[in-house]
Image (cartoon, rainbow, N blue to C red; front, side):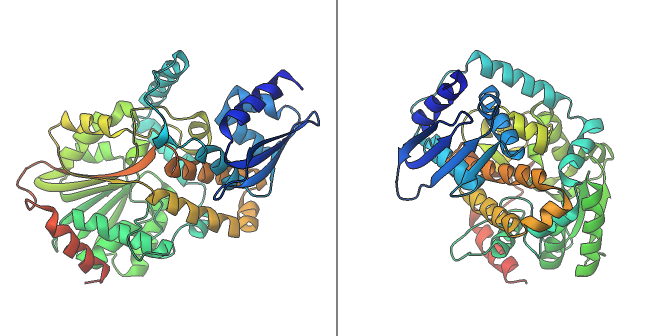
Length: 417
């Protein structure tokens, strides 16, 4: 047994106790780890020549590329089941105490900061295009049909489908905005126009949506026209920083799934822009993926293949940045397992359309994409990830003194009135 195989075997032995994992090494050796447990998979993996070394060099990126290249194959389940088996055996919320940052982590923190520092206006568009301009057809197959929401859904009591959960998310956010007919609303990072269309239809407000994705822009305009709200919606290809410099202001500002792309060095610029885009008595709602613990780093796989320049913020650094520009965090909600449920729906839809997605791209892309969805699911089910919805005001009197206004507003929006 090679030295790399021995090191990898020690990792599996220390990680897998619930569920079973049978490992077939390139040398022909076979090891078995763990024991059968309810709720945990019994899987087998095969490692081709060089795969073990590839994984040990950088566990997440190496494992991803070994899987993408067909050097790591799985029997008894898929990549979702394998990553769940490994992550669920070591859930984030059961770890004891805080480990001090190692020298390697300090180096990675610094590199992550330097990468994010380049996420200025000139590079932001190319970073967005890397993920969102790969074609709308993939997202059409994966996302909910009516709203095309590529962000965490809201799984309240009685919600059973992705379509219901995404509509519930839109109503939940809209209720926090305390909308009134005729309000002018800005949607930063508007995606394919789902939020703008919903707000125009249900609340009778005028919505300006901005994006840096040309693919999203074109489809958002078509969808708004088809929905009959072209007169209430307007979509622009513009950076939020440039819009803030224009002097335009809005009654309400919403930003869903966009703050993750800002990059840590740009946090203060983002919130300064947010504040300048709001009327003095305005309200903003920022919905973002977040870390439940302290600030961290972006892993190499995500930075290389999924969201270059992106960074998942901790709540502490998010609020610290907004405090510098005197934005008041008037309400904070933590969504804990909602995104895991959403991601599992997206994964299931991708698996159901595997042949179509592979025909659009190739099998390697499909394995990369499903690795991304599986890893993200594990991060929200057993890792340190969650979603935050942070409501901001500039004036402490801008909203009612209690949260009681939210529930009836949410019910009214869901009822379509």
